[in-house]
Length: 424
Image 1 (cartoon, rainbow, N blue to C red):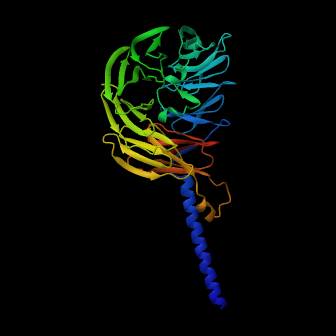
Image 2: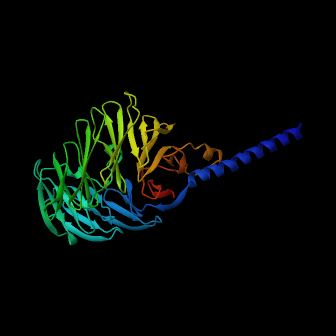
Image 3: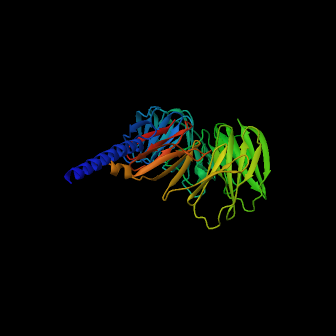
């Protein structure tokens, strides 16, 4: 009897041991994930990050920490009591408080600091170049100025404008449907005046080059020296472009929607993707070639009128739409459905730079089976292929705050004390 019991106990012990070994491997795989590198964050209370070029810029309330291509921290840019932070296409960035501005190069070195000379009316930074910036100052409700500061923070010109919305109107990159604005704003290299009828770039304190069309509740898109107007008239979606100050093209396409909303916009190397929603549930995608003005429209299947969460994420070839708890991908060329998946409860979906990421609660079953006595992750993030919907990379971590996706085909994950790069 005892022999059989002993043998049974030995078998049970071996099974438990085998389960623990397997669980430790699975738990390790989940936390190690598809990690390219990990790097500690040296600033307190990070709010998120922005990827520009090969560098990642982690921002807190009044600090920006610069991490290089391998994740190693290069420098920290500081500005006490900063409430405005912006970064340009070259990686130059600025932090501003109530009466001073600090300007940094892409490596986090201070290039200059500037006192605003008793004019503490800086509303936002609207443009950043290699060594210069422009900010919007609105001391009154209708009286606004765009102020340009050149090398060493020297003021070179001011331009009067009634456009207090300029600070949020023009971007080099956009988030899905325009509903998320990061604390560290990505701004274009040149300031732009936006009115209800036109938009024009500014240089040397005056309008520079040709104008593009604009309209109330809409804005142009700027990247580099190109400015594109986006308007609609009746059932026609209209676009025009200026490059290097010269009119480039004028384009229009029939939009078979009755009540166009202002589109969500995604900028690519030589094109724009625009997501138009019509009334309660109509939806169409327009792909626009920025060099030629050629536009192609694809209508997507309608979604339920009682949907409460609707988000659109676009690449050059696929459009991914979230309707409540369902994520569905469509071909940009044909509108054909490519795949559809149910999202876990409390999942968060984001995209930037063409990388689709899904953040969800982490199931700690493998950590528990492994008899793990340390910290157990509570979040899991995965990068999904927009073409197939399959997971391409992922990692489990503690308290994921945000993701920053670049053009490298992966994502940088921001936690309370660590950066984690996953993917390629």
